[in-house]
Length: 297
Image (cartoon, rainbow, N blue to C red; front, side, top):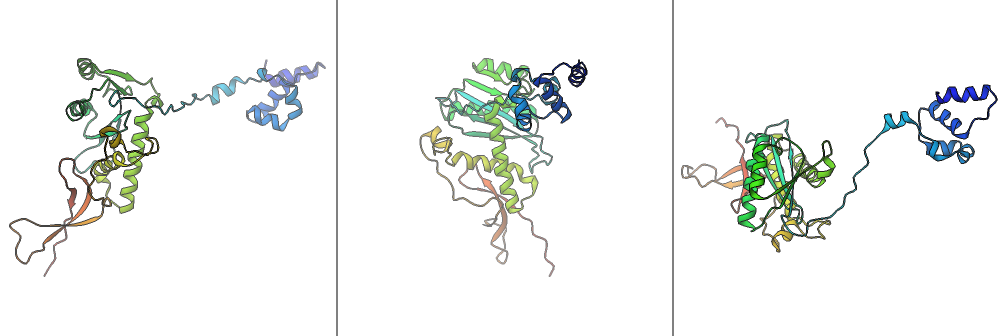
């Protein structure tokens, strides 16, 4: 019987209604507030009630939420024992080189992040093969476990066959539970926060988001972190601090000397560019040339 009708029916028959019935009646009249709120509004009635009997099915159906995941904060004891991965995108703005996605691979022990820009989600396997080969040749490491979500870019026949051939265990999250891949999810958010801040600060065009994300990853890998006991990810991975070029503000204007042989004796000796990051293969900076409007004499 409906709680309100039950309460009225008992009163009409002169039957003493319980404190639980009265509290449930107020609970429904007031729009299903929490019972802790009712305990403050009706403390005398609440003291007489049995807490276990204060159950509202409508609240269970209407307010049900998933239990929160508590971050363990633990890290693998050895580098590359566990690698976290996630794909971000598609970006509404295509990058200067036609990219719309990026994929990250994060070492659980050192928290070093490798990032690859992609044109399609299907490029994840190619990126992982490149990352895996680099781990073997550059760091003599062995990837034991890859953890990702259930996206089709990870869960497919080709990816499964490659992981099986390399003896790598693939751990996936439960459906609709991105919290279980929290390291990669938080890293993506961190990368985007840094990239957005750098771009907004210098009013950089949105199509340079790819260069901004790569620069953000490079800086984060070399910055000390409280989580890593005030060491940098690269310091934990390599055991020493990495050499870093003199830092420049992302998006700042740079003047580069023009060495081209066709430059005339009276032509400008410098080219105006925008700084968009650091080269991964050379000891130099990445710059984009700014085309100046033609001057009329």
